[in-house]
Length: 146
Image 1 (cartoon, rainbow, N blue to C red):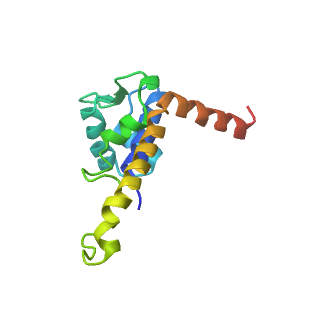
Image 2 (cartoon, rainbow, N blue to C red):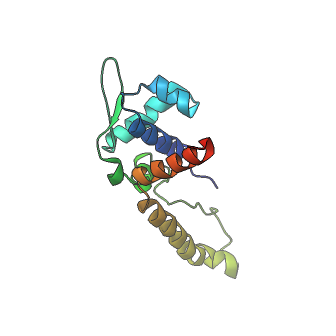
Image 3 (tube, rainbow, N blue to C red):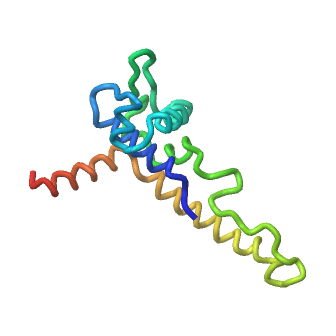
């Protein structure tokens, strides 16, 4: 199972918006993400609705509404709605209720799957965009010899 790419694209977008001093258009962001500007506008709409970015009308351009140290990966995860109401994991629909495994699998396995999702979300809550950019900059500087 994979989480929708909307999450990683949204993190890319917010990171790029943070490091650039100019207001980026969807075309400029799409160039960095290497995707279609229409898809960027769709994700921008979700990020805007969540209060993470603002978008300037007319000539366009996205900007952060919060300090990057206050935006966590969890905030972005929630904003782009990558997990449905039923949670991260989807169980098979109709296990055989006459089988002792089938009759109990959802309840027992569900407990552990909820714990796994909570653990993942806990990690996302601990990482801010500022921290992420710091690590990316360190990697860039290490690879460029700077």
